[in-house]
Image (cartoon, rainbow, N blue to C red):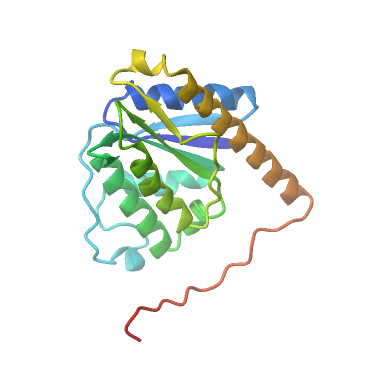
Length: 211
């Protein structure tokens, strides 16, 4: 079993990375492999709402978003981390995940995410973390992805990495989240071995409020 840890920060070894590293270390102790995926500083275009992904089988914008959607199929769970910018997730991860999730489900690749557990984490100097977590959790709850919880909100605090290392409660919750993720994955695997299949899926019946 393997979990993808998505670092949505433009800083490779910043505050968000410290939290993800703590998660990776704990997952390893639980016998779960993990890998940190860096979004980096490369510009990510926003969704054009062109719906071309439904015809092309991928996003019309050819960048690393399409590569990520394909890459995701090899993972059993996900953690998405973001720094707080203006009381919300940073622009890079927002544009990236808008397109990744929309194009995946419109192009028939939703199974790369569906029924796989996930949780989000946020890092901030001071505030805006709960709004960021609410924003990121919506990608999971619209995609039939079980959301893993901890014992407090999934956040760490600090203006720089060395300060995050001093946030003992925040890092403790990262470990709790990781253990809960590992437990869920093991339970899911045991269920599959016992013949418990994934939930039945239905074709979506879209409606709106004017008909």
